[in-house]
Image (cartoon, rainbow over all chains, first blue to last red):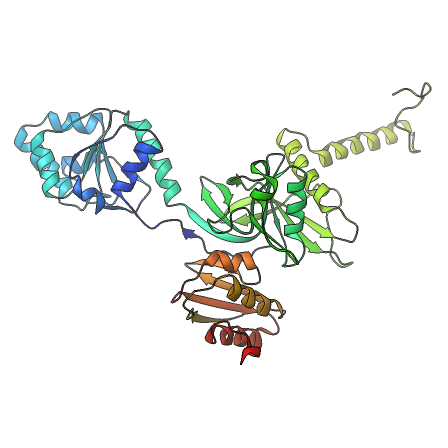
Length: 343
Length: 91
């Protein structure tokens, strides 16, 4: 295991409602309007990525009401409210506002009676409306919040995008991770981060990125710190890449056993995500850069449904079966008869 | 494996020179050396790692050494923090 156990940290513990509104407008390009509690937007914090539709709470059952979450009032909640008399509407709505709800979103162009908005204003709960359909809106907001509250950890290694495959080169200090990354960049691959890599977990995928400090800098022993973007240009870097293969470098000695067929598939669990792992022994004269490219291409081949090791094993099985059937036991040349120097 | 908390005391924080002194000292020992900050674990033998911390004056860091020479390594590193990353030869 190249990394010790990591205790993941939440990327953020909380964000304000205003922060969410700003990002919904600017990054996700959603139309949202604050109808009530505008000043409370800066004070109310969101601490959970989950959303809640408070149908039962409106009807009176508040025992397991998850008030800490953002509350979404869609068509059914709003139609339920409007089916009540105006006094009953207030009573139902007040069941929500007695809790310290971060914010209430009115989706699908629904609106609330002015009396109800006043109640929210008094309780300092922001009410925000949007014309976006409920399910679509909930999906977009949840996706954004999941990213904000995602689990993160920092690992030591070099992260490079090789032919579109995110390789994390790990190994002990001084084994030459940065040098391999530099060599890969020189061959036209793209550096994500060197030495300090943040891994963010989002829906069972680990995204690797640099930190704001070390982005696209690299330390080469004896040279010091170099700037990859200034030196190799924009083509040599990228902000983030999904971690797809872990390449674990170690100094080879006679006692370590390595897989010679490629039939054993190793994985490493990082934040409970299983990452395919290649344990790569380093010996003098070995071109690790080329091997890194081959690892990436092999991963691509596997992804497209071709497993070289398995294909070879199949061929072997057929040949052994043939031998026992026909008694033809000596090794055979690839083509039985070459017609001169043709392919 | 031993751990100790330290506080950065020099006014400029851990900028390039202190970081270089820290990494140089840590690399002279066989033990692994890690720095914990805000829940993240940083390799203390990597210059970019230490610089990424951008530790300011007053920042609290937890140091961890593990290996056969962990005691002397941690002691020397804590001493380096205490004398604000100045060289012993300066005295």
